Image 1: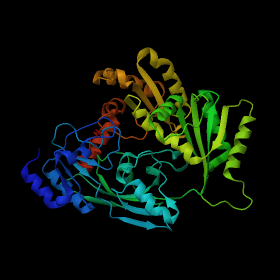
Image 2: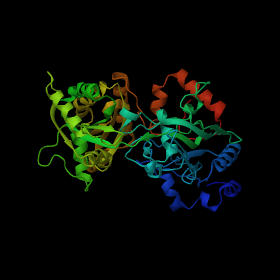
Image 3: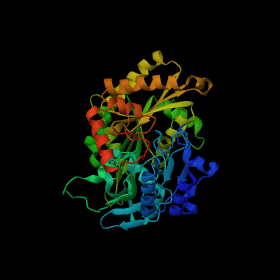
Image 4: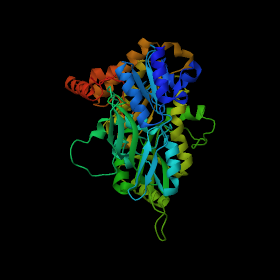
Length: 473
């Protein structure tokens, strides 16, 4: 799959541990998290920024296409090779040595191959954490490359907001290392170059080291399930919660009845929180939190949340049909099981959409009305980050009818959903999953030509080599 001369040169750079060419071992790097499968020429696993630089420089000079891969948990085919067998996967999974915590600055310098769970475990003794909460367990470099958001975006923002600096290898003939590491939060001395590499999926360079902002671990947490009176009541409910709770409100997550039913059907460990009652058509998981230990005389957060909900119940136009405060771990277990439930409910065609906050439910309600007449064999399993305008809009074809999902069928379905989301509701076709082969077409369609020209120009200037699965030009 690759010339023996190139194999020998790359082996000399990374050593035996750093090169994978056995077909069975390569499968983990060739198969994505959702239906995508490619074929790599080989897999490189450099163990340092210097090794990444040498690998990239060699491949650019020899015109070998590289696909950077972090944890391979992406959902848009942005980190897996195509089917041609000529691309080399450059995995970050051995870049884990650097871990330098600065408690006073509330920051940490880590290698990009470190897993989110491993980093937070090492931070636990400090009382700090990286506040991006995800259902998957990605590596940090991939989180930066795709600018992930997560379930607590409402409180902490996305990865971009929490990135202080980075080190990146440019895809040029020298494998130029650009050192943008800094622990400064305020540095208005010119272009903020690090942001060029956050959210651009490796097209402009491969992130190898990161300097991240940390937040105090919440010491008090209270959660509630809120059943809105109808879809139109959700935005007023969010506004009421924000007015009364301010920065205490850390999550406002939406879960449809279909999504919860799928999770309960396919995740055996999950407990039904509604017991013998029907599963509501829609539920909001609301969380409030404080970063300090309870103080004497201070109202507990459960009581704070109950007081606020009582006030909302007394409002003139009550947006609630039901509400109950419950154990945080049990309530979040449902939210974190939704993706797994949707994945096992049938053949999945998934969308990662974002809207103005008031348009999230308007879009979902419109789709529930219009979809059945256009695609009668497709069910909606939707959930997401209502507090920040995001929705994971999953369409599922039952396994018994999964033969319907041909490439043509999926293309027609995607074309229609994106046209509604973008043209009718002014949304985005990628809220937090980035760009990959699965949604490249829609980037090309919906991105203005001047913006694409700018992306192409930056690519030629900064990283002219063949790197990444996305074209910004």
